[in-house]
Image (tube, rainbow, N blue to C red; front, top):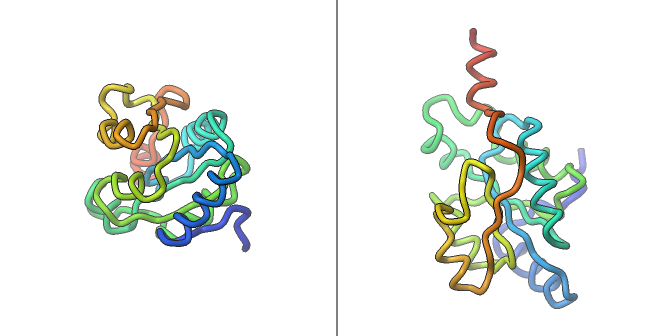
Length: 158
């Protein structure tokens, strides 16, 4: 299957974003594990895309998901999670990042807007200071956080 948005490594993504910025496009960054895709994810990404011209999605590597979510995770390998996210209409580019936070990705692509889901506030986004330091802004998007890959897995295991 061919994804509709490119899945790029850090260097390729940096060039892609620079070209898009030079063309006058507003760059939005969203990130997450996206282990088992659910409606909360699609609503989050659609909300992020609505804020700008180009939506870049950073996906946590398998190693980072295991550290964040615990044993047995991720349920879906990073390359497959990236392919699913890339197939969404709202997404323009996808990358997999292996750092514990999205800070290095923010510094590399310097998004105009960094989005987080509704389980955050603009004040408690961990990368807030980094985003502000590069002249960007933080935005909270998506529906209430009442969807969860972890809960889906628990339901399936019952």
